[in-house]
Image (cartoon, rainbow, N blue to C red; front, side):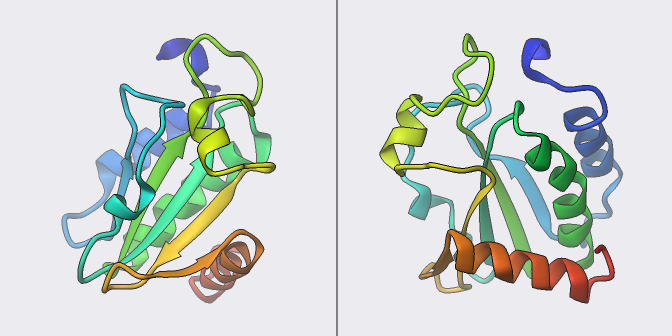
Length: 143
């Protein structure tokens, strides 16, 4: 795992997650130990909370810069769960567009977001979801 961490990005996210109070929203690495493998994303939706699924690559500079902002957003919004999905297989350097996960969801750019409502229904994906995430970040004073 140490091979795919970028200085400042993932380590900062880990520090932020460790320091979060218990009442904060949740951020979790949903495919830890299985990066790049296929996954049924709908199963990640948390009942009773808005779920933001963040497809990312540790080789994506915008993804790395966005990670601590998403952690701060979750900390400020106890109704929000952020489920991060690393699209990269461990042996691949650079953004892994050919990983089973990237191919399963036909990903052509990262970060790529999916938003599920508190009842587990998909409400937004792609550009629409990204616009919502940036609106939330602005509302929270993080942008």
